[in-house]
Length: 350
Image (spheres, rainbow, N blue to C red):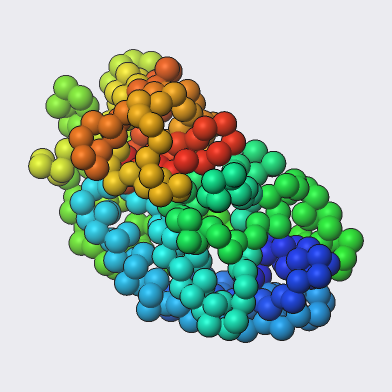
């Protein structure tokens, strides 16, 4: 129970279905944990208030050391290498569905549940499939695609079949105190603070040139780690070079030269990719689907799954060939693969 409305209603639903429910509040970050930027104290108070209304026990557990070792260390390595990682994916596979699962089993629990918007289904062969949520606008399977059969086996997703609007309506009707609480966004350990200021505490600033694809210098960046492909804000490039007044976007990182490549226009050809290579594929079923395969895939969480063909390029590598170009696929983010509503797994974009 995070102190948000989703996990609050998930617990209420399970209690109503006859489960013996115990709430667990996870503290995953301790460095610079202040009320100004990270709301863990407030969230614990909210979670405890919800537990009191529902009539269940709640306990707080500290996974901060494991989070730093299993998630944050990888987060820093990726940024240092010029990639843009998604720590929420690792947080799910290493903390919420591993450390938390181990803790729940030690408590004697038969199942664990979260407030994620996703569904599961057991196949005739005894496998557990991960399915997109009924509310497509809230579906979170993108962040869950690296889970294993062992991790999915005991999981309940009480919100998988209902809409977010209904979740808030239930919370309001039942007097759950988090019913109007704003959804959390971003990464807890960064919170609302300026991202560059946070990252500069762990990685040195390495300023360099911002250049056009032709090599014309148009500005200065503060360090490649602070930018991501497709980024528009914060480039501070004065004037225009093509005479159109079109906005600038990050198109590439030249790590060897410590140069950031920028282009003008949202639909610039260098921002579009039809072929997306990826590494470290993970398949939820435990085995790869028969390849090549016609599937759909997402290259970002906030994009719709698009039609493509995936095939193996070499050991530990695959390639997705999209029917229509995808906008700014970003190294370090994930290519997540679907067969209809079924999330098959995914890989890290190169």
